[in-house]
Length: 362
Image (cartoon, rainbow, N blue to C red; front, side, top):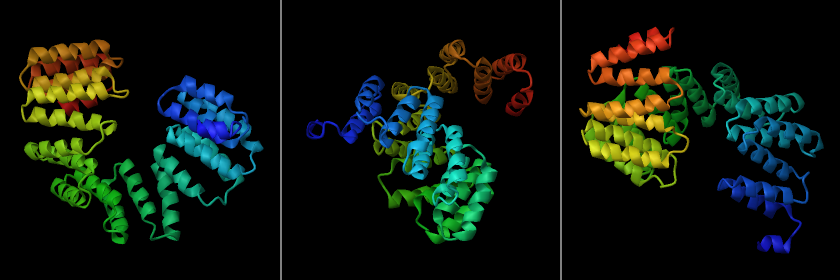
């Protein structure tokens, strides 16, 4: 307010106020502020409208706005780069790629272009092309730890965990204490079933950063896969204690807490964790929680209550075939084979062509 009173025609304070409203999901108010900005041709005003259109589920209109303003910019190169970053931030990577292509065509010497292109290719899951670009970059910059880490992430994306592990070792040879690289190494070891080694890395990370909830969470998942549920329970409690109340990661942590408590046969604690997660959920459908509750109840011998939760999930599901499969697997894993076979047979009838998936689980 003070900035506006001193500089009533200034763009920056109004953009700041509009972004505050966007942060609090008050899009109508943000749009009113955006409309009140005197200089609608300002670069930052254009970016504000771009975000508002994206947040209003109009990403294609946002792209058209950027393209219409492109030729008016004094620094077109930076304008295109920043615009592409906005679309990437909102995970509209195909639209971002259109801007990257224009940037590459008009400004091929841009020093940040290759890194931007690689990040977007990984987001688009075009791992082979990303790896090609990364290899050429590493040939020129062999001590760039970020590039080695990105290469490992691309291999992980392809499911090549052994290659990813070999690659991340180059990064760690340069910076042995790089936390992101160590997490990636543990992730690869986890998927290669070297669970003890993954656990040891998470212990190392917890010592170096004892208030990082993510390290305890990842360790809890690892310990649970080792059937060390008591230790996993302690780790998941620490993960929650070091994760802020407004952090969306709490949802996944609570879901894993429910799983671990269920394995310890603490049914009430498991269901409570799921209920808390459900209240915090951002976009996670209710049916997913009903399925999880059904699985927990079934695992703890409460078949009737589980059936009621599964029935709710099935009625509310938009993908009934997938829901049938999930229910069938839950019954099979708890040795209720007659019910499992019945559900999986229904799945086959509903979703022909996926019999191989059913056979694997049976």
